[in-house]
Length: 208
Image (cartoon, rainbow, N blue to C red; front, side, top):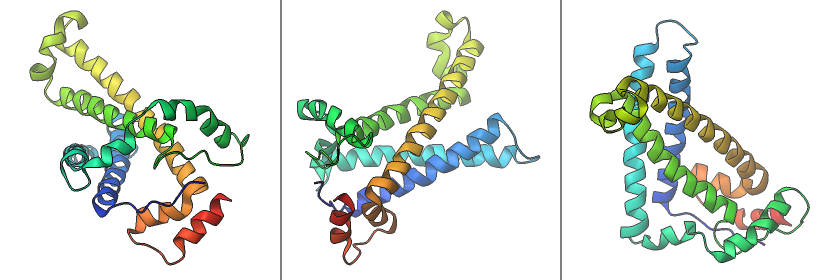
């Protein structure tokens, strides 16, 4: 049975900031690509750019927190080892309702680790493709040749950025569903930033 792990406040704060930014970036990004009301382009672009900087700074601070603070061992929670690889089939069977017991071997399950690690990499890709649309000459001149020019390279960056957004939407939707369905008590802890009375008992009964 998985144990209840209370998250440190900096982790929850970074998670909350990331959540708000992803929601705002998705909505504003959709509007920039497909305007669904008149007269909001300047505001939506401003929101998108501001949140882009915030999510980038949040990522940098989160990495610093993982490696250089009192919680510097936090990065180990996301490291994927051989035990995680061997445990993945059991995790998949559990989520497919073919196995009753949650195969817990660490703070995060193997699929969680993979998802979170992919998020970090995808954020960097989204950051580069997003910035390259703002500063085409400065960031894309090195690859103008293979793409056939800066304008064409920028067009491809827009495609990659758009695909990355959909990957975020899909992964986030799955993450929210599993958080509510499989770990609602601990999700409440992450959202409201406090230890609720009886939360540990509720979490254990939730997993029975």
